[in-house]
Length: 244
Length: 291
Image (tube, rainbow over all chains, first blue to last red; front, side):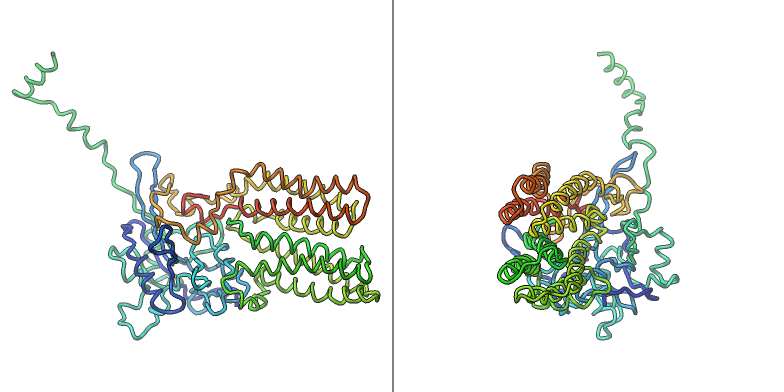
């Protein structure tokens, strides 16, 4: 049913640390790997070796440059996937009931065998988290690797989303954001975790940790060297050469 | 937003068909026999061709029946119900008119209300989207209703009413063009709110996530036709409203006047609907440094 649960006690989601992400795209690759080899329609590529390749991805890493009022600009790598919103507009617009939010853990999923591929849920999502697979004609989105996190055939260490398991920098965290005592909730509280586009009222479960303030050198690094006063023979040479 | 031909054909033709059905249901035209057959064939023709076109953009149209299940939350599902209900309720009205019986007025009136409800549901599919600020406004349903009623009045031979509706349509179109331009900014979504990085400074895209394009960009970041926007806006207002109104004022009321008015109105409606999509900007473009 496309009616949203009134509330979900458990809110499984990701916390992404923008201070740590190095923009290596390993999460993109592991996500595509896991989700194309396991449940449902594979994440197809169109014209993969041709002039105009494109493909379905559930996670993409953008890179932004942020220019503060003073000082040098900062580059920030920005992974983006479904935020499993509490008030998910993609769910309520679905005409077939293929799109739904789970009562038990808040994960937003697509039942591919009921999806007609109308694309309205992708229009309703502000974050670009849903992509219509061009080969299968059904909507694909992040499942929080639901086939890993509850999978008792996997070693316990692997029961996290593929992107989290793979991240070599430790920029991605998975847990229950509905439990204020969980490690992810603590992290959000400590670091001021933020929502994306809060003005649209989607109440995302996933949070982003803002980059920590950078150390700033007190002045331009070369200034003190330029001001060094030479002494001795060098000083005499310096004074003599100035006269010419 | 990508102006997909199937969706433009769907909204324009089904709007016109249901608008005409609303007038037929209300009984402003009481054709009998062969006339009734032709008149209802035109109304049903536009409505059904439009609805069929809407299935062309589906990834899996064979499951389209499932779209009737979620009427409690989904405007798309409600539109499905309203359209089928209209076509079913109007069927006995059409059959009785064709075979010379007098259809009960109440059935026709119910059909008329359902027809307008269908157009309203269609408009709400777009108007509900907070992610497309240009659409997320009461003027979207107002415009869709104005188009359906204006076209319907022309087809129903209601020359005077059609002229008044043309005037309303023209004013609405102009108001929506002018006021719609500011809606994205008014929504307040920027690259800074999209990334949450505004607290540090001004954000710009340094490198996109991939060198090629993707589904999101093709579907929601459409910039191709925007350079002819001003010309198309004039064409839309002129053809959809001004020229048909002049035709109806000058020519004597009758089938030729109606046909000519609709023939002018339709290209205008297509231009307006093309702009409706092509001009609409989706907030996801902010992540790509584009709108």
